[in-house]
Image 1 (cartoon, rainbow, N blue to C red):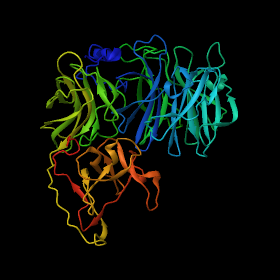
Image 2 (cartoon, rainbow, N blue to C red; image 1 turned 120 degrees about the vertical axis):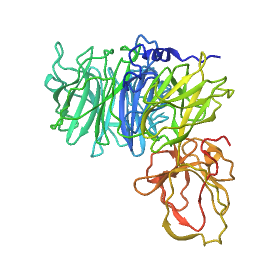
Image 3 (tube, rainbow, N blue to C red; image 1 turned 90 degrees about the vertical axis):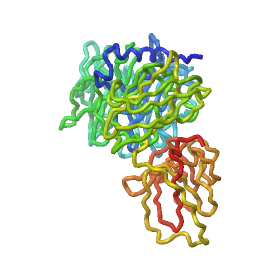
Image 4 (cartoon, rainbow, N blue to C red; image 1 turned 90 degrees about the horizontal axis):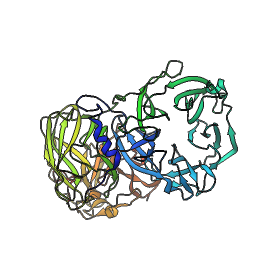
Length: 590
């Protein structure tokens, strides 16, 4: 049966006709092409930017919005799709209108403040909570945090003194002081005086403020960005020396433009750069009800004021390279045409609804001194066509081709390999999908293998008397790569219990089976430690609850490279870390 991919997939295929042929242009905005995305809310956590978005349904002629999505990046050009992380179904009391929300982290938990229409009470703000920035989020209260006319577009900030503020509202701007538990507030709901001096001139009204506030602090100055000027909207801002005013209007940041009569912004600083997120109607079929999230890099003026920021199709420059020798989710995309994503039977997401001549671009890939092979995790209920690997454009040099076989099911995956040659240094990488009519395949993840990789024989450890194993405990070096970890006493392997790809799953020892739960990617960190990522996905070996006591449990948890996920390798008289003798053990179906 042919899979249906909906309007956005068909429209995205028209990008070439719309003048966005990647062989002719460098278009990387909007940052999401697989759906219509709205109301960006960026958050920096660790070495990653997460952006949370709303979702305009295909074919909508009003605000048909039912869920919220999350995307992440480490380089500001390639975005990993984490799918739906929260929805109207998260809140049993919600009826409709999954509009603009924001996530904030506190105490290792992530709080998502969202506006909805409640089944009783109208405009409401709910709060959901998760242990991971990528969810899933669960209703923290079982009822609205607050309700009232125009209570929409919440923005949240935790100040340096620990006090958290939640601003919201259209046409009035209001705020509450959140308690430390982040799911209740004290002192009542406060209405801000949005006079002309505070929030800008607008003929026929006392204020330019409309909706979509974005509240944060930079240095000693508090910023309130907002959508203003009525319809069509621009983005303007005010500043204050305190978190609750008085506010002083500072001007327009992004003038009215683009094929959307609304706009909604978010701002973050990341690795010494400043980024302004917004939405427009730039994708084919785009409009005020079919919007798309984009981002621009900018620099504050010396006095802390904003420059004028214009929409572009280029987007920011990359601030890091992508390492192709690590397992990379196929839904890590700089730009794409024709494809969508969906929840994957092996965890995370997969690229889906792939048809002939669809493509994916991954930007600024650093192949170093060269790659010798490529592997792709794919599924297809029929002959799935091919994946061509091109450098720098869709018509660029072909360095390899993967043939996708009949696996019998859309979610029954196999790993296919091909040799590659003549690739080194930095390039943009294009996946070009070819085949007969209809949907061809699902694509889960991929990985290249460097020329210096060579099969390593597995030595047999020699048992040592109890207490004689450790020598001088000097710190050892282990290269980045995939390993099995074998206990010298039991001769069994460190394994994720039940091979279950879920945060919090226990880690134990088990006879060697070659399962993904027994494969660990060792990566050296800049501070002299290593992290161990499971072959099951983006889960790291983790000391539960970051306990530092004897008997603390070890399991897997969402990878964030914190202290509870860092280890040091010590020399022993026996080999403890044992490289696999298989060619590509992390991807084989053993």
